[in-house]
Length: 427
Image (spheres, rainbow, N blue to C red):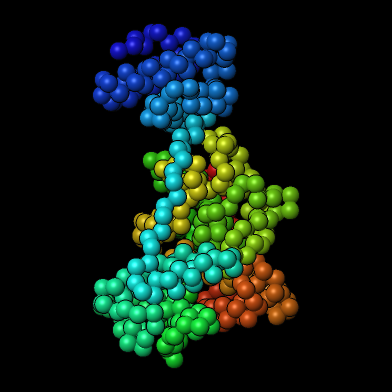
């Protein structure tokens, strides 16, 4: 094992403290010593005197060396990250080495195997040529494809028997899933009919029952954010990420996936807007934010820049800061902190609080503020429609109608951001 006294650079004291504090196997500690000796030698060679694990040092060590295998490269940078996390834990600034991302071949989509698989593949290619992602729809088509093979349905005609059997709702399947899977098969039938195929088109167009959306009260929001801001995440930067992420949903009305996929280069602090790319309906749009939100985002980005200046995404993930925060993660964390906060839905099981509730609350508070200010709401609806990314003003009106019953609960509340964005103290 390398002796600790061999470290003589300006970071030697911190390296010694780190190696003393870690409780790992002898073999792994030898590996840490070896990697940190490389860092120590670099400090001496470059006459590094600041005593800070800065970006210049890390980026000089980060590149993969000639003939260095992938695993060794990953281990070396993992050691540097662990050292940086240790420095953070004792209150010292440190730049965190990026994760080593190796190129992976894109996952191949499973092929359609039924006789109607040719039509399904043609539909997917047609929709994607129009600019639609068509990922979830293809998933349901593949399920229908498997259903046809499993039940022995053959032939190039989409028969009534096939469609009726597919429309039967299995035990445990949600109404929303049933609607999605049947509508995709209906689209398949219409596509086949328009292109010379034979297909039975179900006369029934299903739509799930829509409950009244859950809307947060100011007291509920303050309670939720208090629990979130005071939690110590194992990946310390995630406390910053989630605190700002949920506040951004609340103050802009963004969809969860839209906020997750924000690229830093598309954040404009001068114009106070975010360029949202490839949103619902494959559309791009600008989303605007207020002055206090701009301050919050600016401070957050500067602090995160000290950890991961090379990052592409505004909100990074816990396992790999080189990847964006995932929608599934934000839904999971929301549920955890909703329960930790001791908050429960008083509105019934059909409209439980979720991340999309931030969007509902944003819309309702905007409408309420306009009414309280005596503004002409109808003349302002087109601007709200653009902010929300709705495909038409009619969709925005329908959205607002679903929220209408909540006005009595919101109009008496203070709709300012006081207490929700308090001087951005959490960043």
